[in-house]
Length: 165
Image (tube, rainbow, N blue to C red):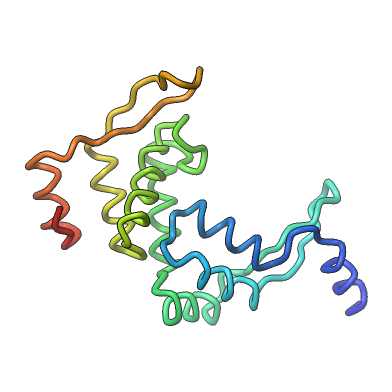
């Protein structure tokens, strides 16, 4: 049985670290390398019904604690925020094409500004509440998200997130 597990791992074209890095970047974590290192230590290969194999790290107390202590990523809070975003505005992983794309854009901007963990998610929530979208002038069927930084947004960032803009 152990041999089958190692064969599955050898059959992967993407390493556990690379998979973790993609996940972290997709979620906008500023410390994606740290997330990927911890993910790789906890990940196992899971075969799907269609025969494809993917890396998966179960949300165990040990995994969540290591992400929090080493990387500053509170996975449980992140999961709760993502679940709320899906309930209130669609699947935010669908990118800027969906209503939830504003949240993803907010997380990415927060990461670019050096925020991670709860501060990044707070930034994204405030960004989402002020975001407007317009059709992209460059790509058909795509929208661009924008949140003009005015006094109201600055005030919310400061009071809710402790972020000065």
